[in-house]
Image: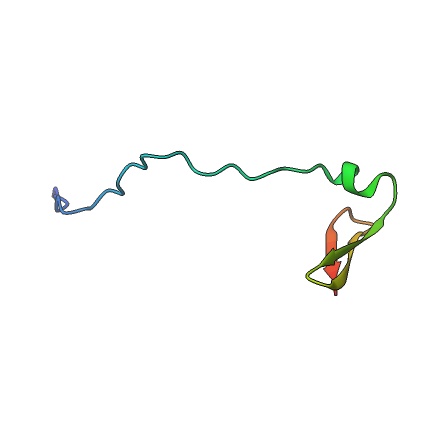
Length: 60
């Protein structure tokens, strides 16, 4: 038995402008051989750390 799908699916319109590019920063450039850096954001200090498993953790 053959079932036909309705032809009422709407396709997303094509974007006329390309998506904005996000700046990419290598973690090695940020850490420069250390496992932890401090980041000041909006007057608060945050700690960004590389774990032993190679994951990133951000703490306030």
